[in-house]
Length: 260
Image (tube, rainbow, N blue to C red):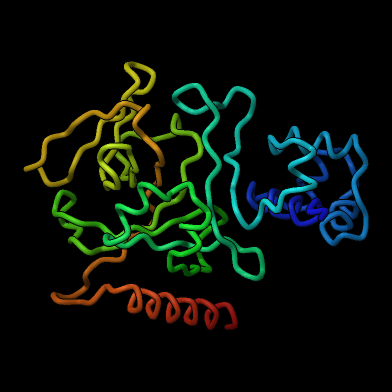
């Protein structure tokens, strides 16, 4: 089966480009991009080769693999490699019927499984998922936080993080969810010492916990925190169903504001 039309649309949206922007990169008319994505026309070999260079894919992958359902390839220029000197791995994601990326929810009870299944599309598809219409284009994941190392953020709060596809872009002092081989999922304030000694420094907001380094070779994923869903009142239930209801109500409010 030929997946070129869905793959072009998926990879363009993954990069956050309009059809006009992709057409500019390829030096072709915007109307051709529309024709490719709608399946009314197929790009010739030269255009396919250029698309492959832009999105770091082989022509065979573009034609024969349905990339939108199983993977997201991190975006790098030739010089933008990951901090261990290799391209970052393929990231498993899910999308809705309109090809919009979902936010998968990783509760504490799934943390151990996530360490083993984070790159497995089948495992990712089994996670509960939702969408937040007000977030900008990007890849997001939600993590339930355990422990008191990041007070005042309470245990059981949820952090929504945006996927960091180039770890050299980690900014000192900002908060991130880090998945590592030995520590699993942790939520910390990061300090980037990659260039100096190949480590990240993880620091808690609760000063009872000492800061510690982690070698970049141990790091599997990094997600920049963009939104917290915390305990508003003592005993507030942050089960997935309640979070989902909160998201649905928030979505309704946003839609009503847009309508006005």
